[in-house]
Image (cartoon, rainbow, N blue to C red):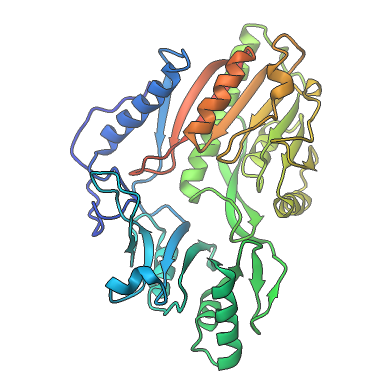
Amino acid sequence: MTLFMPNKMSSIVCPYRGECAGCSHLERSPQDEANFKIEFLKSALEKLGILNSDITYIRAPEQGFRNRIDLQVRGRNCEENKEVSRQRIGLYSAPDLAGSKNREVINIESCLMLEPGLDHLLKQIQKLDFPIKKGSLRLRSFAGTNGIWLDFSNEDIKFLLAEARNQKSKESLLSQLLEMGIVEVGQRRKRLTQDFKLVDSQLEFWSETFLPANRLLDNFSPMPLLSTIAGFSQPGSSSNFLLIKESLRLTLKTLEEMEKTQEGPPHKKASWVEFGAGNGNLTFPFAKVFSEDQFLALEYDELSLEGLERVQENSLFKNIMFQSGNFQKNHFVDLSHFDRIILNPPRSGIGDFLKPLTTSPHGPAPRWIIYVSCYLESFIKDLSNLKEGGFQLSALSIVDQFPHTDHFETVAILRR
């Protein structure tokens, strides 16, 4: 178990400390925060009867690592702004001692957690006038390109489009945003053109995964991944690298142990199924390490699936097949055809994906799962169901992609 002794508080000097809810653990030292998160996870596991868990803790950089941020916008037409003198673009305020949910938006002009390019974009955004009521805003910066996603009401979007088309100048909000980067609008992720039309979504390189050169995991090469601005990706490249490396390390370690105990024949070609392939963040590194194996990557989002297939074509991966469908609820896959499972679900968890497996604990393969989770509540729920299906927790790590916050990523190996 990785344990750190409590020391001094974090040395980060943030002007919003104690005011912004974004970094609620700045008062803790990195060592104390590690202890806190390990004990919090152990407590959740103990409620399932899982005791004496050996947990490894891996921490992302202290600051300057995020290339994506989601912000709240309270524009000048927002009723919440009547008591303040200006619009607000930022994060929610920290809850008060009474736990009130009526939290304001704290205006954030700069954030120490952001990579320099993204922080510069935030500073430029703060100079603009948002003539809307309220909404949310996603900013990205990757490989020198900026991305901006406006998740506003239909009423506000119509107003902004009419303003831009009528003014015929660079003074409108949308004109200024287009000068800064690529703009997507609304839940349908429409692309905004230079003549202020909304067209179908287009995939761009907004994040990257990392391909290992060998099973020693001592050398990796970055590989860009396609998505929309509004699509999912990990918060930053440096923290994502830690997640990928630890996922592979635990997998290789477990398979080595299984070979030693003769639970699995050595050098056997295996078949893998991945739930929640997303943009391929885990798909491609695993397919690279286990290049002789076959992979079926399952994904619900059609745009993500398109991105996966395009990246595969350009990178010459021959051992991956893709399938679309809502695998949380239906489109069941015959799991008996697979040796190993990769679970990388959304916050809501795996749903009924493994129901055929957990209801037949003495059934056929697979008997080995790696589960990568970004949300502890759904992870614990799924772990409880897997436990009833005969699976036992074999290895567990925290990859703290969100230092100074309540959140963390878990990587777990389960066997039966």
